[in-house]
Amino acid sequence: MKHLLLGDEAIAQGAIDAGLSGVYAYPGTPSTEVTEYIQHSVISHQCSAIQCRWATNEKTAMEAALGMSYMGKRALVCMKHVGMNVCADAFMNAAITGVNGGLIVLAADDPSMHSSQNEQDSRFYAKFAMIPCLEPSNQQEAYDMMAYGFELSEQMKTPILLRVTTRMAHSRAVVNTVEKPRPQNEMSMPKDVNHFILLPAFAKRNYAELVAAQPSFVAHSEADGHNVYTRGAKPEKAIVTTGIAYNYLMESYDASMGRSILRVTQYPLPAALIAQLVKDGAKEILVIEEGQPVVEELIRGMVPSDVVIKGRLTGDLPRMGELTPDSVRKAIGLDPLPEHAPEAIVVGRPPALCQGCGHRDMYAALNEVAREYAAPRIFGDIGCYTLGALSPFHAIHACVEMGASVTMAKGAADAGQHPAIAVIGDSTFTHSGMTGLLDCVNANANVVVLISDNLTTGMTGGQDSAGTGRLEQICYGLGVPQEHVRVVVPLPKNMEEIKNVLREEIDYNGTSVVIARRECIQTLKRHLKAAKRG
Ligand code: SF4
Image (tube, rainbow, N blue to C red):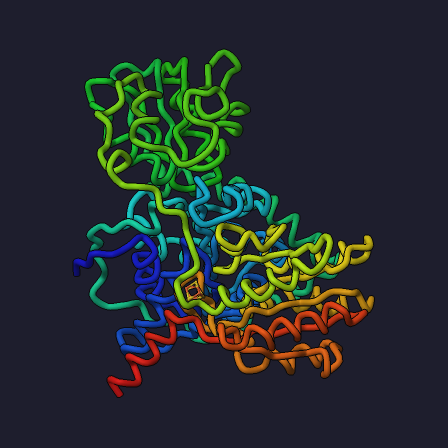
């Protein structure tokens, strides 16, 4: 069957067709569509029941997926690249426990930081955890690699990292799918439960097994057919290319160039194929890879020192950002293509909060109150409201990572800052802000935590937010005095009330929470439409 699918959708369909039992994820661009596709497939009965509710954060997602795998069923975890940092504890230890049912961890990297605060490369995590990594170079391969990845995971008893980047996740191609999905695994207990008890004695044994398995991981990379070596007529100048970067190369490559090409889509690197490249006469290897120079660094230790390695580290390709057809053309000695028109005719449009958004009214009130203090510091967080850093608000003075607003405000208050205010969304608060609030309460830190509650995860398109309807109870439960958990409705008509509440809580010497609650107007529109339809 043929479908026109985004890379994310191909991954989702591939997982469904491979007998998936549960997808666990926290929304994050460019990975969100994988889980949404599976959710829609379940709702529309296009596939059998699959657990697919959003998780509170990437760590809880990873752990739930490991639990599903423990029970012998196939599980998928999805996140954007920075989510790997959040789930790193569970991820690294899942490599030590190993798996029972197949377990694939999808990390969607965002080179050029289109929607992210860094461009870290998740392939490092696979190497760090010493597990296999798959990196599809097109949508069909992304689909096929789900079945392959689950098989490999179950055969090798290890989690598999599937790494994609923004262009792969968000571009469409025709994908051939199987007609009948594989049934889900029956529930089955792990043969040796001690594998999942990481007491030092068991963990040491497991780790030794993981180390011993490394040659077989390499053997699969060399033999399973995903890594393809093609000897050229002029093999002195070879190319090693990975994942979607292969497409950039193929856009410009002409067979008459005669180069030997090694296409890598599975890691650990296929040592035998790299050795063959050198045996065939490669004196210079150009490494074309999307993201950080992972292969370029590794390959240096795998070839004789007189073989010249070129890539991002040597300046033959840009050190930062996404590859482009032109940057790859230049690296292989071709002239750039004629100037692309869009940049010349499309005027740059800085991102902004939607008109009518409650965050706007929240910032309008906060800015007015903040001006009444000599040196206010407002610590922001990750979400639509991060745009409060830009014109016309210029309201926040820091934004680092999920949940950092609360704990950075605490640190600033510890240093003597007053007022120290954290601005955080409802979804980000339950993702990573709650623990910081507990730190504030335990220290009675002089901090105001302003939760801008739009009742959804707005920035990624309006997914469920884990604490909707329970934020006050969560704050009470964490120990914030009930009289210092205040709720306001961010609307222009309520400006005076909101400002007074903020003033009172800033003047209170302790930890307080102000919840500015009004639904995201984008999800509100959708809800109203759905209600009309009945
Ligand atoms: S998507 Fe929703 S929360 Fe985000 S800026 Fe627009 S209205 Fe505000």
